[in-house]
Length: 165
Image (cartoon, rainbow, N blue to C red; front, side, top):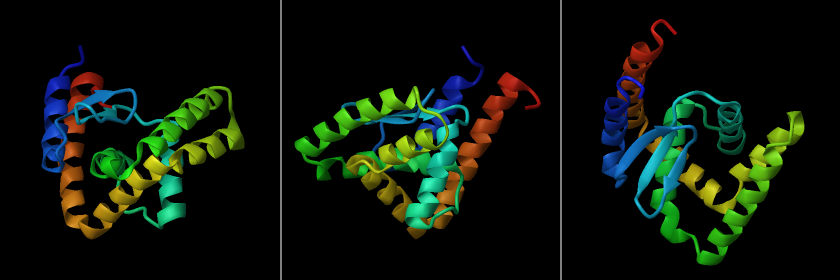
């Protein structure tokens, strides 16, 4: 087990509780679990984080925060918009996500980026991102404060596990 893992999860969860999120857990990807109102978050950067940042800038003209915090807000956005999605749209999104994720495994370069953008533009994904960007634009001080608290917790976690990274 990684040192400070539970403290990190607790610190991130504390930042998300006001949005109705039950808990946040460090994992290998960002996700929102509808049944439990839980979020997982990525412990390390990934190539798709850069693609997501680029997408948010191109689509929404937004680049004012770290990809970690906007990704957390995106997952909160799923929670906040899930009642706006019909079962048919949800089923379509799940089918398309499975297809895109399968194709991404074999894609490179421009094809990989195109598939990432296709994923980001699925109806449930774009609604969650739109919510996140709107929240971040309307509440920049709250988002900066949230990021500082998350960043502090992340640094403590990394220091315990990686030393001077």
